[in-house]
Structures are given as structure tokens and as C-alpha cells.
Length: 259
Image (cartoon, rainbow, N blue to C red; front, side):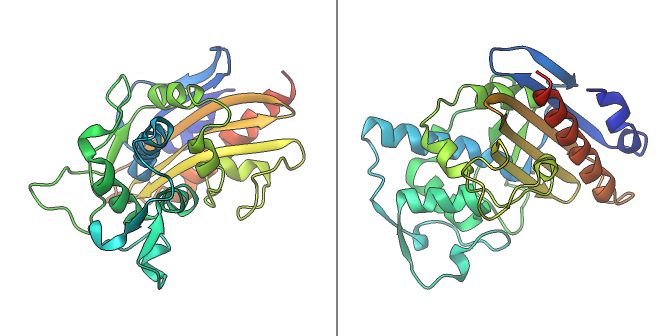
């Protein structure tokens, strides 16, 4: 995988990337500045899902416990709960909303339940800083989350089969980035389709596109993380960045099928 060639059209215009592709077993296939911390938008919500899954696993949190959306700061943008009539949902359904549609309000309700300070972090500094906010004031962290590709690949490879986190993110409907290469139905791809399975979490914001995940092709699994930042007040690089991410997915798919 020639990452320099794939990323050049965006790097030449001021984009910054952190990318890593690694096979289960530890072999790094390709990487570009994998330890560089960048803004990752909603990707950091994975740390929240990991904490919720851990608490369910130890019995400290009942997956059927009803959570009230009034207990978390209201927020708009991505998500469905803000549009639903019900005020109360079980913990696991709230986690599913985060995994499926990156639900901001559901994220805040779960954070209120488990505590921001309890969340895990990546060994190189990747983290979710706190609540999702419609606006950020001087006292708030300047970004929702930050991370690097090496951290996220390590985190994903550490998730075992049967992990609730994998179940939740298998519902993810955003296949606009690396996942666009596999031709999956964005609304229904939990089962293998043409030998492909995908578990992923994406993040988008002004000047941010990030996609981290596991892809399994014909039974062979690979972890990937592709994170891109660019100055939001400069040239709009969104289309070029998405094209580069699609190209990474294309190369990843060809790589796995030839393994």
C-alpha cells in the first residue's frame, strides 16, 4: 500500500494525516505518522463504549437499567434520540444509538452515568475529553476527542470476539470513508456480505475526517485507522480527503484478498 501516493493530493494542500494498517497478529502493513495526535471528533466515543461494556461485564452496570435523557446535557447534530418520543431507554439501547448513528445526546447520557474521568485512554494520548457540546466556551476542551492511528489500531485489536463494543459498532451507518470501498449496505451489514465484515467508528467535524475499524475479508481480519485534519478556514479538502480514504479502503481490500 503506497500511502505517500494516496495521501499526496491532500498533504500537498495542507492536510495532516495519521494512518496505520495492521494485521491481527501484529504485522504493520502500512503507516503514515501513526503516533501523531490529531482531532478525531466522534471516534473518541469508542472509549465510552469500552467503559460501558466493561461495567456491564463486571456487573456494576445493568444493561437493562433505564437511563433518562434529561440526565445528560442536551445536544443536537448527529443522532436519533433527540427526534424520538421516549425519554427513557435501557443502557444497551443507548450504547447501540452511539454505535449506530454516533448519537450525541446518547453519548452525554452515558457519560453522565459512568463518569468522564473513568474512561480509558490510549497509551499515546488518545482520549475522549468530555461531553458533546453545541458550542465550546473558553472553559471547555477545544475539541471532543483526539487520537493517533497507532493507538486506535491497538485498541481495536484488543477487542475480543463477542465484545459488546464490536456488536454496537457493527451497526454503524456511516460508510462514507474507508468503509465506502467495500460496497456494503450502510443500513444492514452485520452479517458477511460477499465475504466482507466491517466494524467501524467514524468522526466528522469541520476540518476533520476520521475512520477506525476492523475489516474481515474471507476470514482474514485487519485493523485500520485513517485520521485526517486540515485547516477548516482554508481550501475545502473534504472531497479529496474522502477520495483518499476510499483509496485506502480499496488498497486494504486488495491486500487482504491477496494475503
